[in-house]
Structures are given as C-alpha cells and as structure tokens.
Length: 246
Image (cartoon, rainbow, N blue to C red; front, side):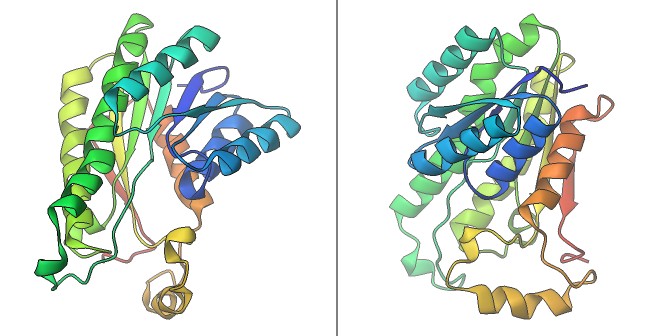
C-alpha cells in the first residue's frame, strides 16, 4: 500500500517510537493523527514539526484504555479526513519491578498494564476497523516487545502484556482479513526515554549485541512503515533487536 495521502493514527505518537513513526509516515506523504494521553506538549510539537516540513498532522487526545475515548477520537479523525487507513498501536506503559519480586506485583500493576498495552490496542483496532473495511483496505501494526518472547523485561506484568499483544496481533489478523492486514513488531532495547536514569545499563548492553548498537526510534519507525506498505504480509511478528535475542 502506498501510504501517500492515507490517514494514519499513531497512538502515543508524540514521543519515542511513536514520534519517529509520525515523522516517517508524514515524510511518505501520509496524513498523521498524533494521539496522546498526557503528553500534549510533545504531541503538539510533533504536529508543528511535521507542518513545518510540509506535511499534514493533527494532535488528538484520548486515553486508549478508555473505549469511549478511543471511539470518539477515531470518529473525530474520520470526520475531519474522511476515514482512517492506517493504525500504529504504539501507546504502552510499564512498571519497573524486579522480575523475582512477585510480592511487588500488585493487582493495580496488572490492571494498568493490561488496560493500556492490551485492551487499548484492541479498542483502537476495533474502532478503526469499520472505516478500513468500508474502503476495503487497511493496515495495522501493533508494538510488541522481545519481552513478550523471552519473558524478561522491565517487569513480569509488562512481559506478559507484550506476549498478549503478540497473540492479539495473530487473532486480529484472522478476524480482520482480507481487507485489513495486521502485523506486529517486537523491538529489543531502543534508545527512548524509557531508559532515563538507566543509560549506563543501556551502554553496557550495546557491546554485547551482535550488531553492537542499540536501536534508535527511527530504526523501528522504518520497519513499521515497511509493514504498513507490505501488501503480502499479515499475522507476522517481526523482531527488530540488533540481534539481542540470538
């Protein structure tokens, strides 16, 4: 699919991988809806920079964990631009909890991570699906993580939530075919603000990776765009991790 003039919703689109993806889609000529929950300043700056580069973008607020807010956001985008063609389910949260500290894993931690990381992605996919089916084409990319493959990450609930994202991707690919393609990307370590305060750990990891580098948000964004454009692929989870899981 050529993404030029297509309408793309990027959740969590004002920071990190979401911002890089918003820029990459705008550079390819897409109209970008930059979603945010609390990062209004970052989302509006992303929109401003896209506009200054000659692209088209708007910032749209919604907490993806709230189905009502998601539906209102998608309807607003479709009202302004006619439809929604592309969805990048990027918005995610984490809690930093030692993996072996099971007592620190509260019900609140489970609920918060599942509400955003899993249910939020489902709500967004469900909200855009009627518009994509109406135009008989659409593409969705869900952001998983190697934590969902290895079981190791910032916390046990985070790793489990990302494994659920991978399963959600497979199920949606079946449920929404043939009009809508659904794929996932499982990044490894990426140099985003999630490493804030732990940069030393990131720098120690880099030399031990086969490619001896930590991925940049732009690396992941380029793959996301490729997955959105690739018309012969659905139901795939592709690892982009500089060889971290080899």
